[in-house]
Length: 521
Ligand code: SIN
Image (cartoon, rainbow, N blue to C red; front, side, top):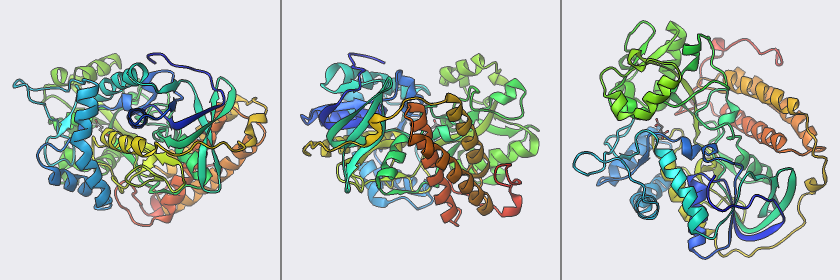
């Protein structure tokens, strides 16, 4: 990573502790710093690309001159389930936050057209083009300058390679978190603790998230008793690059080089075709390739099952000049994109998470959550494209401002500091493998009531085994596994409790389900 940064985990006190260094965490840290607070930002990351923000492609939506249409699009994409008041917050803060932080503070040069006007991109379920972008690599162009700015131009103390493993709490109040660095464990006591730990991509074998996305913030908050909601709404992106098509395998796996083929490519006019060369989306939805993301993801899944492969046909657009980075990535992966890019759905975003209000306040005193780990209500059952960076920015700023001013109190930290730091790595690897298998098979794009029951049984057992380890050993990978187990169970439970197919949560009849997996039969 960048700039001057400390790397040692030692006992500390600070006004505001931020956990996570994507756009949401950086925004919270910056806002709290601007308000005069002493801020510590802890991140597991050693490199910028460990944050989901770095991986964002399409861009960041702004209102332009039609906020009401933007609000309607967010609501419609959510299948009318999003919270209108949260949408108002998002849209009404959008342009001011983008101008202040991304343009005026970080000097990000979003793409312009020949007239010097912004080249607003178009993505699925947006009525109008309204997406600011830098090629299709917007995340990286936002994240790196933001990290540099916070490291070099503010008083925020950045602790790299430092994981939060447990919240310090007592009777409904959070006092900070236990941080781990290089096997050392120590509490950081804070007036306010802001979780910005991102999503849950590590729970699935195919994800557009970085591998570090183990749901740590959601797990820590849930274990501390915070309200968590909408966990069944796991969004799958319809067009991740399908490396199996190049390798000749029938299945993709977690180690494959999965990368996103931005929806912006379909926004430009690329078409989806099955292995027989047929354009299939018009038969599934009037919006065709720009139908809501969940609809496209299910259609791609069906056509892959029916015909073997699905390709993105970019022959009618200026692919190489419009998306040079994606063209280069395809070439690196050994694909002649002019022949069609093989694609498959991959886990992309969690719409639910830690329940927060319009200032990012959770149900526990002193605990905030922002970005993907938070459930603001903006997304409801499904998220509109290019609103995640915006949500992280808007709620990060709001939470960072609000978090300033709470007194810093110290209490007796949890006893985990005393434990034996030994962990067989194989245990974590094997359990992660099993967990992903269950999530892929039973808690993926399509779910059955019976599959969800079986998933919960397996995940409960797995969590029990992990908990037994946690009582006697500590290591970062064990805590990541515990987070993944806790969050998987939350997702499976929420999905089982919701018998209505809506947005990202899609139920099919039991008879279509796969036979029981060996561990559950
Ligand atoms: C994309 O570029 O397709 C992803 C945008 C998003 O998920 O918001």
